[in-house]
Length: 376
Image (cartoon, rainbow, N blue to C red; front, side):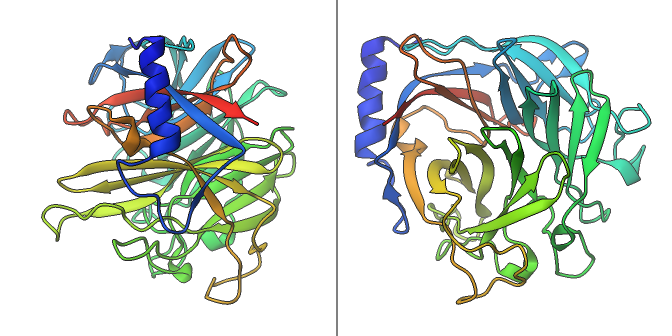
């Protein structure tokens, strides 16, 4: 538990200094919104709850009416069936409480049966990654990254709160999986999801570029542009698409030939036009580096009909740094993939909560971090 004084001190470091890691050269700090770090909480590794193993938290959203969060596990029905948890997470100006798990909900196919695994139902495997609550219909939207080896396309689903399926929204053809190097890369597809403020449209963010648009980030550069697609919620029709360029991988792995990556793991509409973008990188021997940026979705070209994206035929959106998590001075920073607003504080300001996917790995943690969002 952090005292108010400690939280205020950390917020100064977070918002003003950013000295633990340099700001990427293609970003400037946003002046219209800032954050103050409140605190951290974790869940025990492989916690058993409601007959399931808790972990892999890759998506999260807040239901303000009920005062609960929906936490989506990315378990591909390998440990337990595809599912989301309902939890209560109390947050104040000085403390983030440990999440209290209230229930678990099994996600179901159109026929009412649970999704299976690669061995039990290879034609219907899902890899859940993002979830958003629709207050107007009392349903949830959630994404699956698909599977390139099984030629399963990334997919957007809508489900009732009991897990039963309402519908699927068709994958745009450019994101279809292929045996050739075209379309979506495996495990780099529908990672981010956000509803518009009015609930009439939604944005789906790829984690990495499709093959046609260029390479994934390296230590030297940010790679090809990543597509964020806006859909009409009612019809499922794609309306618009913007291009976002991720950072170069900020840390060289150890050893230098080790694995490293960077990509977009979540998006969240801040208001009618501005969006928060969560970037997560990993370098072997070093660990994770996390940053949140602000973009304006009105900026940049509409690239929905442009394929491939090459130098000169599109304009990417401009990104402005909100917070670099390296400056929080946490004992450990893990694989952050979920991001949601939470309850408002006593002063009326919104809270911003992020959570990490532990990959059901004993060396990782299920970590929740809370911030106060300060908007001008």
